[in-house]
Image: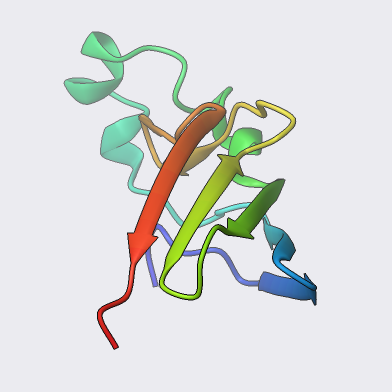
Length: 111
């Protein structure tokens, strides 16, 4: 199929130590090989140059990290870091993935 890598890998590990939670994730994929020539030739290739030379960026490995702390039995705070190495990658031709991002999350459970 077009715009899909042949191989993908995702793994996630989570550890709970008392009130602290630590998590680590890996996401990897092989290079996307089947793209339309329209992305390389006129007209799209003229307006968005370099798509063919950036195709190797579709092969990537990302690392994500998260940590959490249970403030009470119902309230939990999390810090989530995606794309830890700030790797440049593309999901589809001319569609770059997210750079490193930090999120702070507060979770309240009613039951």
